[in-house]
Amino acid sequence: MSATATKPINAYDVALENFDLAANALGLDDNIRAMIKYPERILCVSVPVRMDTGKIVRFEGYRVQHNTMRGPAKGGIRYHPNVNMDEVKALATWMTWKCAVVNIPFGGGKGGVTCNPKEMSMGELERMTRRYATSILPLIGPEKDIPAPDVYTTPQIMAWIMDTYSMNKGYPVHGVVTGKPISLGGSLGRNEATGRGVYFTTLSSCEHLGILVKGARVVVQGFGNAGSVAAHLLDSASAIVIGASDSRIALYNRNGLDIPKLIMHKERTGSLKGFPAAEEITPEELLSLECEILIPAALENAITEENAPAVHTKIIAEAANGPVTPEADRILNQKGVFLIPDILCNAGGVTVSYFEWVQDENHLFWDEQDVNAKLEKVMTRSFADVLRIHTDKKVDMRLAANMLGVSRVAEASRVRGLYP
Ligand code: GLU
Image (cartoon, rainbow, N blue to C red; front, side, top):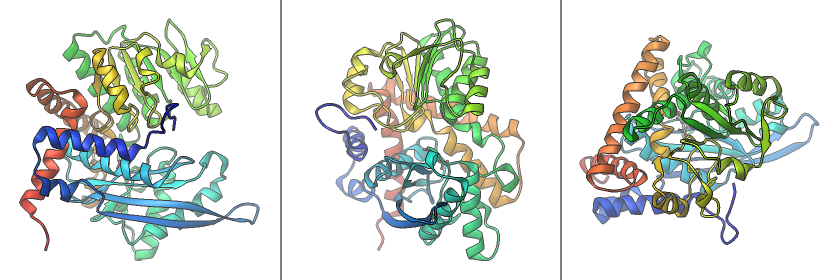
């Protein structure tokens, strides 16, 4: 996570600030604010793991359920060295508004383990995952809280969680996690869903702004699951991906990077490093490339008040969660940059997670075309819903999305009432 020279940026402070802005714009009742602003439940666990050397190392893990007014908690599990309690609280909060924006019957949750999976063997990862899953077991379940992949977690890791949960129950429970391998009740299209959702909302934005996708210059910061799929789909639609980066290197080619080859290179070597036919640039240069579409697809706080003035794009599509700080938002708004906020832009992942959960619960599976068509419908409708608030209420796109999400959760809380 980057930080400005003056003060480190706490993602949870950002989440609370965004909630307050939306609640104020909606004129939300103080009683409802008290009911929905803060996480419902927070669990912090110790995860001791026997490493391959025989040594036992203790990791710290979390699971946060922010809100379950509209349905079970839903949200990924992150394995990353920067994971901490406040980050997980922020990510869980954003999941609540995200599920409400796309109008799927889930609340918000998130989990994580502070670790560096890149330095761990498969055996170590499996033992850590099973121990962590056992520790959060009382909280999770298909009707309570459904984890999924997030940064550096994979379908294989979801399979281990499903197995650990099922062995404890004594029968297979497919609906306890989403983003599973297809052979284990995963949904076709889930793996590409986040990037595909980014693609659909980017197309809608181009249409709204009168920008031709064909020939539009695209820059992708972060070449993981979301970033690489969005790059691939935009490339297939004749946009030109001129810049891409991962945690190790940033690449530039003014005539366009060969995206299918770049994806193959990343799959083969694990990094963008060593890719021919591209110039190496700095991460800061990447974010300031002149382009039509900039896709921050890595971690929080990538675009801050420090580097926002140099950003040179028409559209920012937030494939990551929380990549733009509130100060950067204000600068980009003044510059007239059109933002597709994270809780809308990257909601394709959780939307197809919802489809996966529905298929698991019904033991009836859909073909990929069906999944993609349903995803497109949800994403274009949600984009239109947010855009309508943006134009009608004359508020920026982030505030519009937060207003939509918060208002739906507020309405569910109002009709359910306060227990007891
Ligand atoms: N981790 C993803 C997100 O931030 C997906 C969550 C899910 O599928 O439950 O939206």
